[in-house]
Length: 309
Image 1 (spheres, helix red, strand yellow):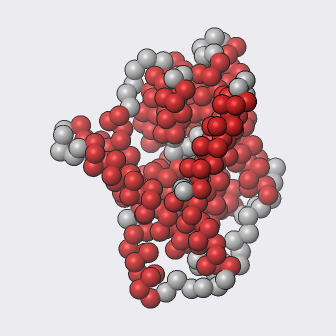
Image 2 (cartoon, helix red, strand yellow; image 1 turned 45 degrees about the vertical axis):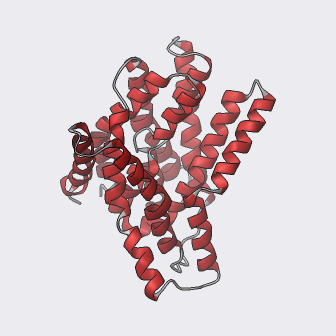
């Protein structure tokens, strides 16, 4: 596999979006609209297209879930404890910093790159993990942050559940699963329409990510941002790789998808969570930018490691 041919075009699309937005050629509103399109239309179409295809070998192994979320728990707990011990962050800011180190940029970065690496073999494990990733991570974050206030926690969790029930990605997964279970083929005109939307997912996701990077800045909190970036790009995938490849027995594509999912840069939801609680905003904003830049090197390294021999 030629890593240059794989990675360079993807980061070039991100840089193109960022550059055009920086020069004022494209307005931030265009990036917001394109992000909405990717999240609500293109990626759900790709999920329905994938999940509707019969695949008898698509069973998910319990170890797959444990490997990924076990890695999340390890890096989240480790970085939260370290930041508190070193006095780098306290209280909610430390929890959010740990969350950022385990929250991957999945839709806009993970989907294009993982599909490019693993192709059809990676689609089912990728989309199933994509569907449960946000619900599990946001619920865990809400519980840890709000654990001192039961009333507020219940309200927050209710809000999370309400948003998830309307999440286009989860709706698409359910619809695709129904089509697969009932063995209803997606053919003819419906298949053509769904495919037309699905094939736009990767390019639009990367381009909109580049435009959105204008919102985030490398500013205060660079020490914490560097620690979060190290946790996200090195420790998180390392923990997942160890569990997936050396603790549980699962198909190599599943173990690889879990590792690559963990190797993605800090997700934008981390910054949104920091804004909501007014805790660690500067450090997390810097971590989003820094991890995205550094990931151009680390992702290539993880792909080379996973594809060796």
